[in-house]
Image (cartoon, rainbow, N blue to C red):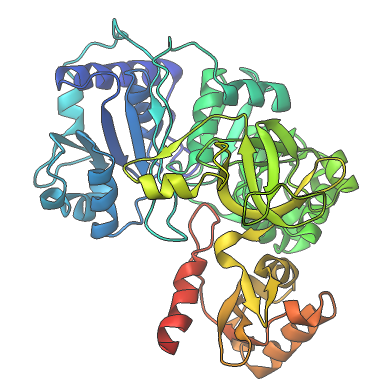
Length: 494
C-alpha cells in the first residue's frame, strides 16, 4: 500500500483468502452464488476478491463514493448473500440494511456497526488451506452509471480449476510480458474493472502490486522511482495532471524502470499522448475494452504514431461499424461500434438493456454504445458515446472532439462538452470548464477558449458558450459524469 506502507505477502494473501472462502462455504454459499463488497483501497481488498474467486462465486466490488440509495440498489440487484465493508465506510454501509433483505451475512473490517459482525473474528477460526471444491468464480461489476442506472455485467461462470488461464491473462502475457519480477503500480480505485482485473492477473503471475490509496500526480512519479515500477495502468486525466506538473517536478524523478505504461477507460487527446511518448518513450500501450469483456483492441506507440487517434485493432472479437439499421459501413464512415466473435454477456436482471446492446439485425453482435469508424487498415477511431452526440441544426456533432482540444489548453484543469437546448438549432454546443485557477474564470477566459477551439476545429463543433465550475463530477476511474451536468441544463429548460 503506497500510502501506509502496509505489506501483504503472498502467504498472507493465500491464507486470508482461504479462510474467507471457508467462511463462505460455512455460510451456505456454493459456486454460482453471489457476494458484494464496498471497500476503500484497503490492504485486504484483493484478499476478499480472491476468496470469492477461488470459491466459484460471483463477486461485485462497489464504489465507496455511492450514496445509500445507489448502494442499496446494487447490493439488492446483484442478489448478494454476503456483504462486506469497512469501519471507514460504516455509516453508508449500515444504512442499507432495510433495503437489502437478501443479504444473510454482513461483515465489517476494522470495527463493527449495527447489523455487522466483525470480519476478523468471523474469519479467524477457519482453515488457511484451499477448499476441496475450489474453482474459478467471476466478477460481476456494474457500469459507473454515466448514462443512467448502473448495469450489472454478468459473464458466464466457467467453474474451471483455479489455475486455468483466461483470455485476459493470455492477452496481458502476450502484450506486456510481466513476470514474477515485475512491479505493477495501480493508481486507481480497485473496485473498477481494469484495476481489479489487472491487479489480480499480475498477482497470478507472481508480480508485486503497489496500490495507491488515491491518485496524486507527483506521488505517482515518486512511487515509480521508489519501487522500480515496471508496469502501470493510467487513464488520460492522470496523464494530463502529470503533464501539467512544473517541468522541474517532472524531471526530479527517475521513471526509467517503467517498461509498459498502459492506458484505457476514456479517450486520450492526441497532443496528450504525443507528449507522454516524448517524455516516457515508446512504452505507451493503449487498449479499448469494456467491463462487458465482449472485445479487446490494442495499439502500441509505433502503430499509434502512424495512426494518431486510433484505439487499436482487435485482438479479441471482430469489429463492425454499422448504421442505425445495423448495416455495416465502409471505412471512415461513422456509426455504432459492434463486436462479433467475442465473449457474450447479459445485463443482470434487465432484458431490455441486454437487448439494446445487440445489433438490430439479430446477429448477436454487441455494443458498448460507442460511435466511431475504422480506417482502411482496420484501426478503430472512437468519435463519442452514442448517448452524447449533439444534433444541432440537423448536423451531428461529437463533443469529444472539442473536449480533446480544450483539455490541453494550459489554463484548463478539466472540461466537459455537451448539447444544451437551443430554440432555433435544437441543441447548441456548451462547454463547462474547471480552470486551473477560478480567479481566471469569466468572460475573458471564455472568449479565449472559444477562439482556441475555433482555431483548431470547424466552428460548428466548437462551444458557443463556456461556463466555469470549481470541480466537475468525475468518477475516480477518470470517467466523466457528463449526464449529471447535461441534465442540469435540460431540467432548467423544462
